[in-house]
Image (cartoon, rainbow, N blue to C red; front, side):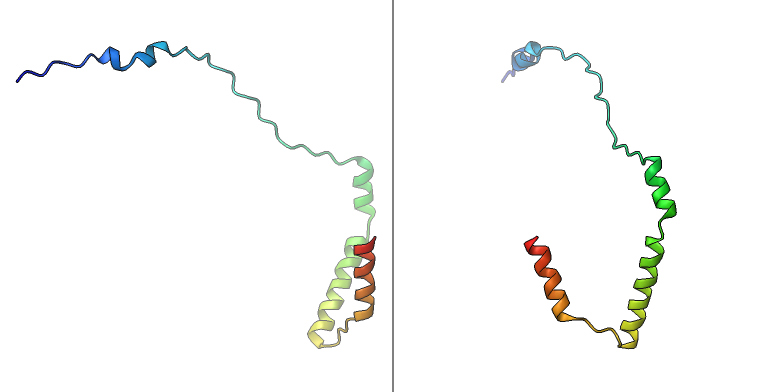
Length: 86
């Protein structure tokens, strides 16, 4: 029995027809960029809001730990209605 070699070029006819692809430039990567204005920096430096909030959170934590923290259910309900209606 004799085995004849396979015509390799007939198998790869699509490879011959493929068009060469030019090396496209890699797309430029865009990164997010943020700038804070000088006015915002001044407001941030002069704000005592963060300190006041930290003190309030600390006081609430102490009240919760001591068992003295009471929630006004009526006020919570009113605030929820304002939020969902407004």
